Image (cartoon, rainbow, N blue to C red; front, side):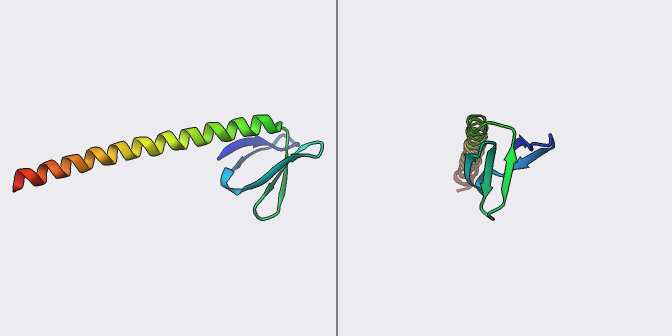
Length: 84
């Protein structure tokens, strides 16, 4: 999720997987998959930057999780060979 600001100053959190498109009409308008539109203060470039940061963060978490999973598998296999 990314944090954005509505025109009235209220902060919202938006799941980037729900974004269908972003356009400037002249305010930045985000259309989500349900068809609803959200008008925000941020510029498109800022939203795209936030989306990139979020994707990088999620990818790094997934990579870390995969590395930990591989370590756990290695421990399990090591214990299995010791018991044989």
